[in-house]
Length: 538
Image 1 (cartoon, rainbow, N blue to C red):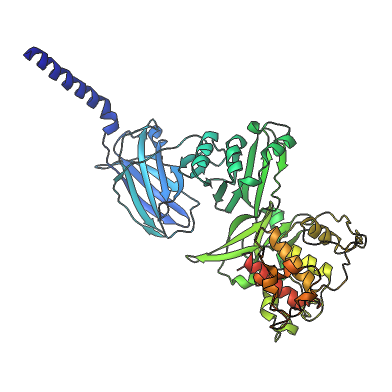
Image 2 (cartoon, helix red, strand yellow; image 1 turned 180 degrees about the vertical axis):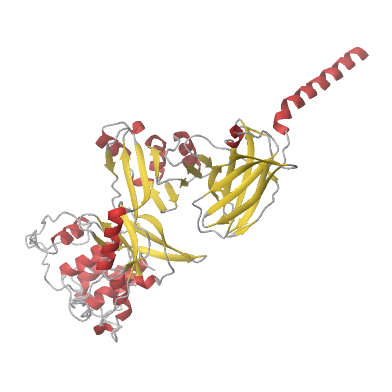
């Protein structure tokens, strides 16, 4: 009996010793810490030391993670062994994590790994402030990454060649409504096979690099159609997204276009492009339909939002035009967020336009704001003619500009719109977007002066195009306060919606004046209200 008990105790002791022996590599302790850690101009630099495994192979397994103050993962980089040793500390590995903007402080952590799996050193954390130095840290757990980018939660770091691992992206999208890709270079290559379920679920990918940020709503990707265009299967296709600073002759042309408008370019020109690609060189453009995607670029100075606008550059005409855009300043840095349903080259232009004939006019603020936004033009360089009536073609052009729409081919759907008329392309664009209708006799009557009823209808259709709710449950309850509401010919719902949304007021407290001809000032004011309600300007 005693012998059996003794044997059991010896067996238990041996088992425990075996477990301890197996755990020794995992529990191996290392002195680990930061040295000369700084955060300045969007870049964290410095070094991390460890007293174990000093060689270049371990350097490739030292991962440095950077987090925002609220714990959001921003980027990952690899520390590089620099062959430096310090007594009492160990060997040093250099740190360089760039393209981090918009934060006053950051938290950095790093862990030394053996074979990329087993930790042989404590993970250390340190908080660094912008332009200042901070060192030290405490023990925490850490993690590494895989090929095609290192992933932590909903964020993936993408290497300079743009490759993104399909399984990494699939897992990130499965667990997050929005996944952020931090690009080391100008592009990301998204495996279409990893996007199939996310497209159906309406998820988003946000791509970030030093040139700007692009929010890609995956619902716009018609993967089957794109694959068919390329002549491949979805599994053999990638979505190529690039955010690249424009240089050379094109950059010069953008600057010249801004100068031609009487403005000043105050941001780099950045090419945001989304296409489908096969394994070779064939590409297929992604059609965003009516979906407005957001992209942001850094403005080079502090600006007055009333005097700047985002613009899109047309490489064919070499001209700039308005893009819905808002501006925000944080920590002394201004960012422009531009909204548009298409790929192209974008920048920001600052203007300071004024017209002598609106100096004391009630519409002065709205007219000058929209002139600086490149939505409205003066009749001359110094006169706006605010009280002149506006034609149907002229207002259609203003609505098309306000939406930032690309011009459609000047095909004539109306018998009185000639293909060589100045407004032919504008009318075709507005008709395609559902902004305008013709008359029963198939005419558009482009030169007819527009009525307030028609004005309200066009703007409400513009709101519908931008996916902004305009429905009014009981239009008559909105119109009942106006004694002339019975004179509205056909646009009762549209006028009620325009009043409800604050886009239009009565001519007086109890008259709507739906049949009155609209002026250029009234048109500008209604468009300014529309752009504000749609959050297309601020």
